[in-house]
Image 1 (cartoon, rainbow, N blue to C red):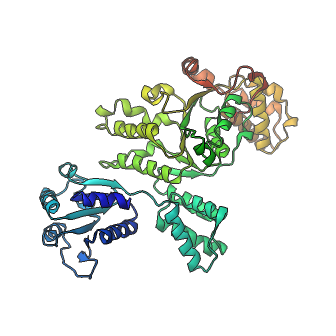
Image 2 (image 1 turned 135 degrees about the horizontal axis):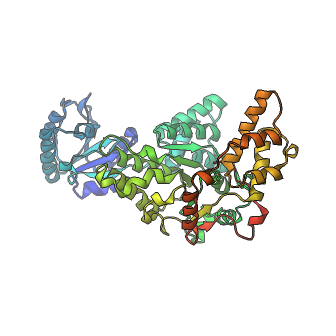
Image 3 (image 1 turned 60 degrees about the vertical axis):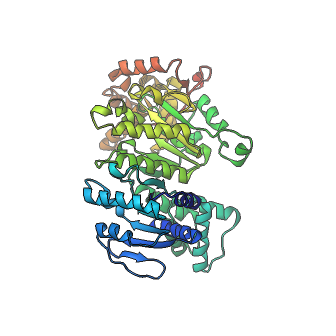
Length: 500
């Protein structure tokens, strides 16, 4: 990043906008750039005004307009750091301020001056969009996090971690800013007397969750929780070690992702969680519906933030549940939201195609017809998988799973008969039927029996009847287009499908 900024300044770029939440780290980088180029460095904020970082001399000019005017009086070959100046350029900016900044940028180009705006959002009026170059300042890498780790260890008078222990700690902190990592390391020392990866991971989960876009999901489900699905299991296991060093040396392309299509309640979400367990990587869950904000440019900034965070935490699994709800509006967005959904969708699929960071995307969809066709083509995904309604043997397995889940002995029930009773049901409906039976038995002061379940099941109308046309349509679409989760030869052995 430092080399990139140096090249821009040497090339005479008069204006840069560095987008980052890490103001202190950006300022340290700009200071190092100024020292390397032997440029003078000035910093401005609305509270302190324009200050020389060399001798602390203050030039006043706390007002943004006064600051622009004061820049013209600064010496040649200097860098002017403008903190939070993007705030004055957002929304409906002052046209006089825009004109003054545009004039100063033109003058700065001839005098070796570079104006560097530091802010957490990419906000530029159209009048300045071509005058200022935007730089996305990435999150710290492991080397930078290692410096923070060593600093905390020295402060706490602990031995600096090394080897595999150090790698675990840095993996846990990857995706945090330097300040957030420092806080997490320090908290771990306070709580445990040492720097513990579990504490750092917990704090990262809380930090990632703050913006409401991504959530670090604790994974407990594994492939052992899913019976059958032999083709899907084989597919995943073949890619289990595809993120490692040996795979890179083998020149094996990094897996892109998997789109799981199926009827609601058949276990798509469970499969997504189990994928993270197979790969042994952290699971990030994206709520696509929350990408869209009310402010101009907020939605586009949100998707860029998601991409940046996912790549910083990589290798990782990015889970997008019910993806059609987040991106189905992209086809008609030009007439409904000024093209916002279309731009967000375009950014996401472009990243899917071009990304080099090891981020494996697992998306689930109930209604594939709502997804744009360009979203489904090869290259975006490694494969499309279809999960159908469970067959009879699968339903019997699901009944046994649910009985055990709620603390009963499955041998006390005729699961063979219950499998016949629940023909056409999803795993979620089987679970709900057993829960209803528990309520009925609890109200009667008894334990649930086959009869209790049969009576409560009489009122159950399965989704296969409520939405038979849609389900048949989905099956017809998947035939020949998507990989089946279970081979036809393996189907009679049954598989366990738990509710999503």
